[in-house]
Length: 116
Picture 1 (cartoon, rainbow, N blue to C red):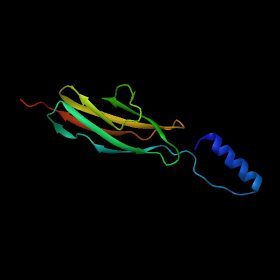
Picture 2: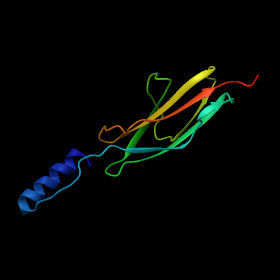
Picture 3: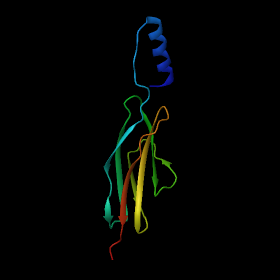
Picture 4: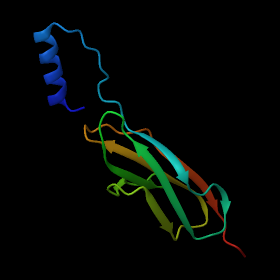
């Protein structure tokens, strides 16, 4: 719910003498739906997730690889990572809503070991 709607609700409540209780801007909620874990031998991994915002809308998702810089992917809920080095890797995703709130970060950790 944006600040204009909240102000209007408060104004109407004051005029009518109504006591109103409402939740103010909860962050989006994310859940993982697909992705690697443990030891893998493929040089390509697909990640997917679902998000929802009960009191607004998600305007973008962001990801980062191995604690790097956050990169926006718009409203896309999937990503394919190709060409990582041997060793442990982490892929993280977060959502941002129309009021600027960020979800908790969801992450996948996997260890890439190529086949000999």
